[in-house]
Image 1 (spheres, helix red, strand yellow):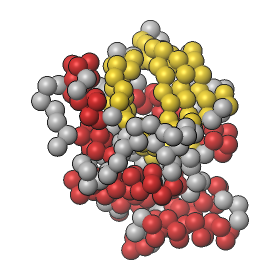
Image 2 (tube, one colour):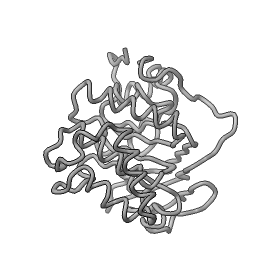
Image 3 (cartoon, helix red, strand yellow):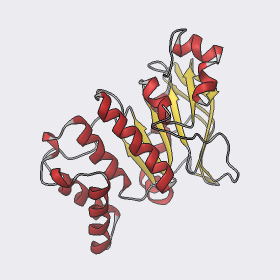
Image 4 (cartoon, helix red, strand yellow):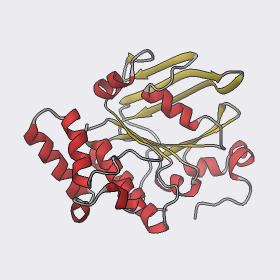
Length: 258
């Protein structure tokens, strides 16, 4: 674990809050998904969301991006209440990057064409577009697959491409949904290093939602356990593993990180 992440941010000398979900509740029909949930993430922090299926992790992502609106509570970016802001305004004004569990790219376009297609929407100046695209191709070592259609890429290559696409708009907040799912061990380690490097180099606030608890806890600063519509535990990986509520609801008695 220490090889991937050499330090964890437990507190900030100077807080720079990027996003706060304040007392959020959400119900679908008669089923309550979230009940008075509050989450805060600062610039340069990596936060993990864990919990059983149906706990509300994906719902939180959909609330942040604007795909869903809460029944109660507020969604605040910086100091601005954006609860009623549509998706495009959140993306443009508050700089959100989103990496979905599936897709996120155009199958029939090459790696370069995928970046170009999105770059033309997000970056007006053509020179700036090209500079940014070439920078990301270099950063994620995509040059050898730049002319290969996305449909022919491996799972790890697709994930790197989608993260590169998400970074085209210089996001302040990056949402990673099930980013470790169905990937081999070496590819997961590669993604973990990418995530930690983004934290150190770009100071992006990153939220990771995943069922691969061990892989997630390896690269986050803090994590939350969602269960029965609420956050039942919050803390560093070490703190969570010694938390009785987290073990009873999610980890079990035999789970270890290393």
